[in-house]
Length: 265
Ligand SMILES: [Zn+2]
Figure (cartoon, helix red, strand yellow):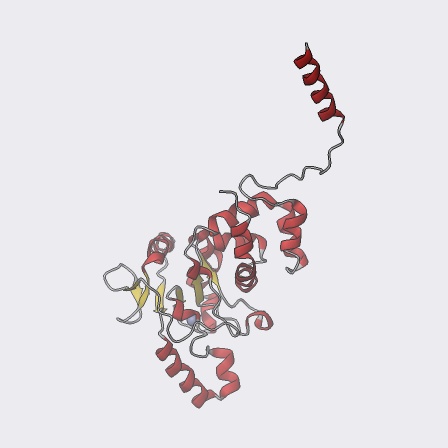
């Protein structure tokens, strides 16, 4: 009887006690994050981008979860402000000869990890009667140095900076970037250029320098230049970052460690 009374008293005290902290619901079962915290983490993004994330927060977080599985150097920034350095050489470079690609030279190299998606993309374009020509791929620091210096000599420094990257700043040094076709403005209206712009993202390839965004990337429109960022990153860029690779990569550089920290194991 005594223990029954004690139990009753304990139960009463628990139920009558007001809850100190209101329980905040997580947005995703595998992230310790509330809606308010998510909105804070994306506060630097353009309004149109924030609206899309707010409307489909679970889809967004699900894609983020996939990105956390990728090798970190796949999504590093190599732009006007971020240098890779002389010593950066991708760990798994391979020569493209021996694959069924159309190549504009015999010394073209890329990272081995991007080959399965590149093969799938080439195969898919062939089903449409197209042939994607790989005109330029990996460039070492010293090769980029040569190209940049030649451009400065022939075009002057100002134009050279719009058209080519300084050594250490080129996405081509990553071994995941390809120039397709003619490498000129005409590629935008070439059937291969049109197909790539529509379908490249489905295979993880993202147009690095879209039209009219020189202010964002520092480069003029390059319809031939695609960086492989993987299928999930290409999708998140398209759906949530206004299809601006630069916005996505800058966001990832600033926030990837935050999402890694709040991930529920
Ligand atoms: Zn390029």
